[in-house]
Amino acid sequence: MKLTVLGAGCWGLTLAWLMNNNFDDIYVWGRECDLNDDLILNKHCSKPLEVQLDKRVVVTSDLKSAINNADIVLSVVATAGVRSVCEQLKVAGLNPNTPLVNASKGLELGTLMRMSEVIKDVLPEQKVVILSGPTLAKEVLMGKPTAASVACEDLKVAEFVQQTCNVPNKFRLYTNNDVIGVELGGSLKNVIAIASGFAHEMQLGDNCLGSLLTRGMAEIVRLSVKLGANPSTLYGLSGIGDLIATCSSPMSRNYTVGAMLGQGKKIDDILNELGSVAEGVKTSKAVCELAKKLGVEVPVSEAIHDAVYTDITPQEVLSKLMNRKLKKEENYDKVCG
Image (tube, rainbow, N blue to C red):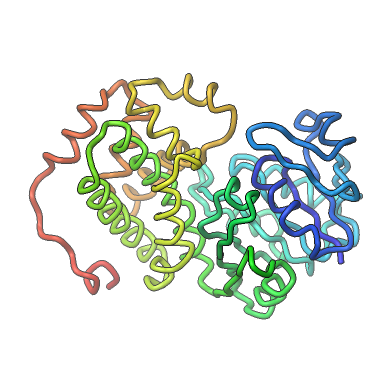
C-alpha cells in the first residue's frame, strides 16, 4: 500500500509520521521552494514543530512520481493553494479512482467554495473524502489519542479510508456521508478559535468563553444548515469536537492569532511572527461574504473579521458584540429548520 501526502507543512508531516506503520510506501510531496536538505535527506523538520519521519519516507517535489500507483492521496496544502495543486494533479494524471482525502480546513476566497467543491471543479471524476476533527498536530506527535471523521458521499470509499488510515490507540476514525457538514464544521470553527484566543488574552473569564463558544456554535449551525448540512453532524467530531479542542488550546494557530490580536498587534505582524498558516484569518472574510449572500447573521465572525481587517481596537470589538440589539435565543428546531 502506498500513501502520498501533498503538502510538507506541519499537519502533512504529522500525518505522514502518524501513518508510518499503515503503509509500505509513503511519499511526501512539496513545492521545491518549501523543501530543504534536512527534510529531503534526513527526513527531519524542526519548525514550527519538530517531526522526524522514518528514513524510508520519500520527500520529493516530483508530483508525478509521488502520486504514481498511490492507494490514497492526502491533500494537506493551504486552502489558497488547493485549486493550483488540483490543476497540477490533473496534468500529472491522478487516477480518478484514487481517493483524494482533503485535510485542509477553509473556504476559497472569491468563489466561497468548500474544498471538496474546489477539487471537484478541477477534477470532476475524483473520489473526494474529507478528513476533519479535533487534531492538534503537537498532541498527535506526542502520541496522545484523538478521533476524526472521514466523510464521503460514497460510504464505501469513506470506509476504505477509515480502515486504511485508522491508527490503533492513537487515531480513531468515524465515517460520515455528510460532506457539507464535516467540511463546514472544521472550517468555520477556526474563526471562533480566533475569538477564543482573543477573549482569553483579554482575561474576559470563563463565563465569557462559555458564552462565546455557544454563540459561535449557533453561527456555525445556522450557516451550515443553510448550505445543506445535517445539523447533527455539527454536534459531532468535526463540529463541536473540533471547536472545543481548537478554542481551548494555545497549540492552535488560530487561537494564537486571536491572543495576539487581543494584545493589539496587527495581523501582518502576527502572521510574520507566527511563520505558518492560520486558516481562520482568510476564512473570517469568506464567512462574512457567504453569510451576507445567504442572509444569515454571524456577529462573532463579523467581529473577528473587523479585528483582522480593520483598525478596530480590542475594546471596540468586545463592545460591538456585547451591545448588539437584544434578541430571543433561538431554539434547536428553529436553527435547524
